[in-house]
Amino acid sequence: MRILLVEDNVQLSEWLARTLERERYVVECVGNGEEANFRLRTEVYDLVILDLGLPQMRGEDVLRRLRARNSHMPVLILTARDDVQSRIHGLDIGADDYMIKPFDVAELEARIRVLLRRSANQMNPLVQCGNLMFDTNTQQFSVNQQPLLLTPREHALLHTLMMKVGKTVSKQAIFEALFTVNESVSSDAIEIYIHRLRKKLQSSQACIVTLRGLGYLLTHDAI
Ligand code: CA
Image (cartoon, rainbow, N blue to C red):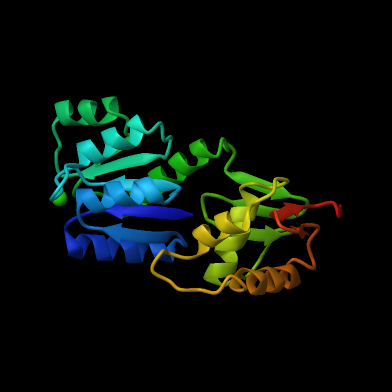
């Protein structure tokens, strides 16, 4: 899951990015509104964490422009503005949630999970593919109740496939879920991760199907 973090306080931004990366999110940080607006016009994210008081372009304007482009990307405002009027205004112009600094990071993570579940139309925190289970609260995969041990990239890959179980996921979408724009990776990298993941899924009923030229699909019946 790819998150755009828009925050001009570098210390807070770096700390929060590290914290979210430990929860296996891919996090891209930008420190001003102009850059945020540019990224949102050119890249796809699963969620945006948006500060309001930003240099160059206010957070409100970044959000307004995003919604004017008819984007449904989930946006969580994270701001020091704690008055009710600002909160109402933020929600009225299209934010999905509003949190006030200082904040509890466990609560922020829980709210992120809610927004991601909602945008995936996945209200049940457990996702299943045969005997492969994914708990969206703990972010753990398991096979027959036994935890499946995965590296961060394998986890990101399986997560991307699992959230679209039974549907084709393009190579491009996988690429974006696994790597930030700043990483230069060869396009074969995905095949290597797919190969490793297939090995780890051998004991489960889930399997990854390659659809030549289209992408990959996670299913529990061989097709
Ligand atoms: Ca700020």
